[in-house]
Length: 601
Image (tube, rainbow, N blue to C red; front, top):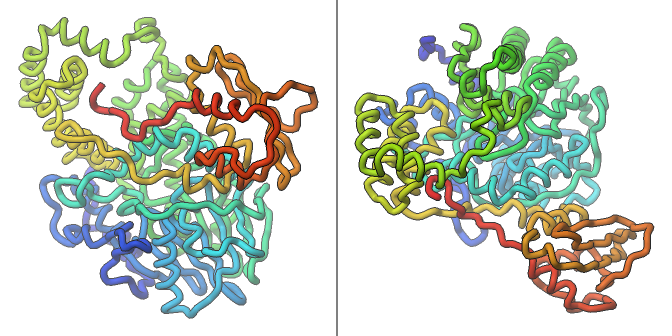
């Protein structure tokens, strides 16, 4: 499908309502460290270079637009200060903040820009649209003194999902997010060229203030600072806990991250639960039925708004059809025996969707989304018995290389495929060469070169970043991610969730012969939790009804627990029994590795 690069509608909409921006958009923390710098992307003002897919370059140019924008009367957005937008809705006495971006510093800079042009309005309400870190992490930038009596609104289940996605598997997700977002790449034609969903991820202070008001059902209405809001719950769409909402008096619709100007991920490359495109499509249809006739603008927490009833209906209908088509056609094809990889190779979108700029694969891609749908229904196993008990990557690579005649023979074969333009298979061969002999510099350089070429051709920026980051690491050192979601969120976790973070660090082999029991009495929460190490598993029992002999009984507050988990020990905490039980527990905990290998064994 030939894309219509002469269509400038998106550029008009991305610039509509512009009021002001910073010059430069370089945001620093209290110590002067740069946490977000848009000035590095000045190359986007020029012509598309040969090292960037033209479609990706166009999307990056759109995401490069930054500043304070008026969406409609009384609704404003800060865009281009982080990967996500912050929306500000004016009420009777102040302003309601929707999704305060990732970093406190970026959110504070955005709020300051708004106040410079709209007056020093206090924050009188805050809404989290969903449970991803780029939509709540900057909360301390707009509420530095905490919530107080200000309502903090979120969809039901928000806190549990924010924890499970960002903390439990946080180390592995952050490591892969380093690849997905190109965190170690220089911005430029040879490196990172935006993220599709936004221009870049900030690296400032992340926090979380727990919600004070849950949205539990579609049709629930709340009035915040005189502003009436009607909510639509959309669990299982772009996030496990998510919601859209409508401002009836302003005829404005917030689509959260359920309808943005790209094909979204059904399984993000950093890792997550597979999302449900069937229910995603149905909630988009419900949103159309509920709100579109009474809306003049739809905006989201990424990208730019869409104005006008006909344009809104077409945009949301095509987004709806996109996810339904991906789901239904993948199921049709898997039910005739095709595997995920085979479906992805054969899959094509219908012409209207393929030509729609907002349906392009700038974040999710048709290829990896189709494989995700297959995974959702069929799991990792493709049904072929040979796939049941494969060797792990390094052992498999060693055997492949042996069959092919050794690493030099693999390199020669791979160069033939590279010269013939089959970069995909060249990468497959060279991957085995590197895993079989990770110190072979010729193999590493050859694979790095293939990854670089694949990256330069990718329309999807997360694919580009994965390829180019892989090439960079093959040529140098691994750089661990510099954002620790867990540390920034610890204070917001429940004590059960905090103990869960211990359970997933237990080294089962070391702990298998250990047995201990610690009872924790929380005076501020009026609850008791018993932790027992049993057969290598850390079992927690809230408010136990059965009697059990405890090695240690600790009476404390949640704040004191946080101090203990940070390495403070039992100093100043009331306890009875053997304090060595805590040391025995700590002794079987594993430390996660934020810089584990990805492109090498």
